[in-house]
Length: 389
Image (cartoon, rainbow, N blue to C red; front, side, top):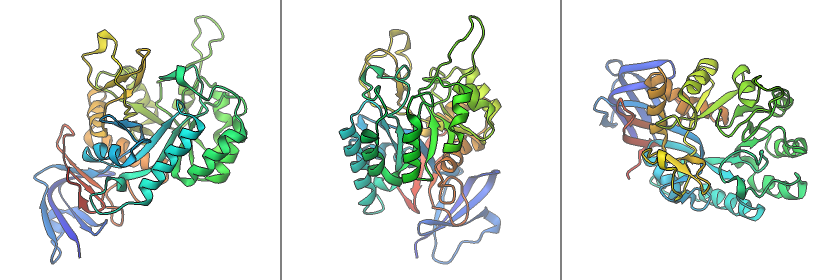
């Protein structure tokens, strides 16, 4: 028996906080959760004093390229360690449109190999949840490293079928630009191979009509809402409606937010607008963490959580999810419990893993993160075992 009794915790649940909470884990699962005075210590259980920390569900980062100098697609096991140490117990490796077909296939193979060769309890590969395909078929006008986009040409079955086949159900999200000509056959094939995959609109200037066209294909999310998007202006001085507006007005769609410390990716008023329109139930925090050693523009060098490309354009962040949670509380009036919904439950729902992760409930994986009131990570539990840095 490998049972743990976590006491003296502020347990963050889906509908509130147990200020005098306790959690019992049994192996890799949550066995029980409740008020400490009503939850007796099981015989033989190891007692863990949370020392008054908030104990919430492990963060689910669905959109992360890499960090600490390591790309997830190059070294999945090495890169995911950094995020796991910071409370991210489920990480999707994001692949980008700056790689060739052969590089896509190699990257998919490396992620698949890492996920299929998990060893002991301290193997960080246990936190790998699959792949987020940020491309290849997005609008080449938008996004970082656009000059390196290798997928500007026609959408051809001979190019995408080997990638779709190799990735299979490892892909949890396909991000596409709905305005791309020839997109429908690609999505039809992607959904045939992996019927449960979520479709997201990204790097796009699609009209609301074009967005709605792909609803029946599973378009359910907006990749980093209000970032790397545009609108087609029809009359001077008249604000057009584009993909962001389509997302904000569709009650079924999720909106991803890159919420950096100074609200550079998304203006703070727009962050509040997204949260106002989508609510905490349809907003997803992402890090979009990237690896780059390019210099930032001189007037932004004081900001430590941003990444830039060779053109001095935004190229993601250096955030981990605990920092994103802190930032959303900085820019809005949301609370700790709501930040956890946007960082854990909602992304788990989007990728179809809500029965396993995302909230603290009996029977779910014992993926927990211990944080203080500024989201400083104290301890991380992955599948019932504390991950030691």
